[in-house]
Image 1 (tube, rainbow over the protein chains, first blue to last red):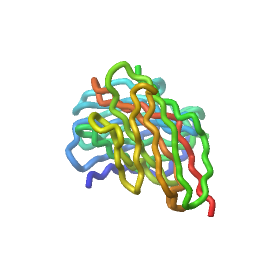
Image 2: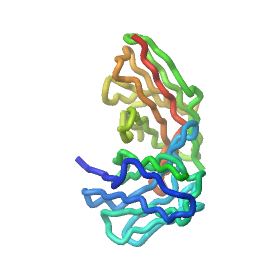
Image 3: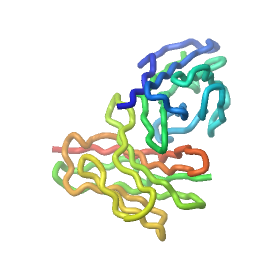
Image 4: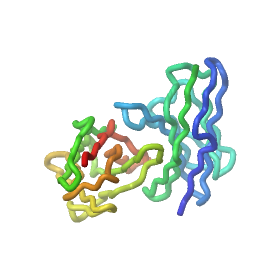
Length: 110
Length: 113
């Protein structure tokens, strides 16, 4: 089975900090995605990547950036964390419409 | 752009009773449709998907869904609910051009004994 691993289950960061959320997949998938999950809003796409060093903005990219230096790793970066970025972040890996999601990182910005 | 509406935020159902979760989508082309389940503290698990063909789709855990193009709907059903079905359920539509999934807001299912 494909595994998508998110390095932290819970994170607490201070306002203004630069935050890195890491995601690693082990099945050589080209496509990777970062979603944000909020109650009543479902999952919203932040950024996605089709290949190494490639990135595309999703529906809510403001305040975020991403990095994909290696095929298996897709990092989400909060340049200057704000309280409205407190949320659950889900990473996914995909090939041919077969999505696999990580267990999520619950980020609290205080 | 595609979008998904799940009209029911929360549904409570008795164990052994039937369950139906509603999903309406908006997409200009033939949609790729999905249902996912998320148990507390877990990632999303695919229940079933529809790409083409038979409009009644069977999934895992005894779930099925029916695609109705005329109603732009893809409702999820289960004949007899188990306590372990308590979870949040998400309907999603896929954009064939770029593999992006757009999700509905989710429906939380509570199962009472």
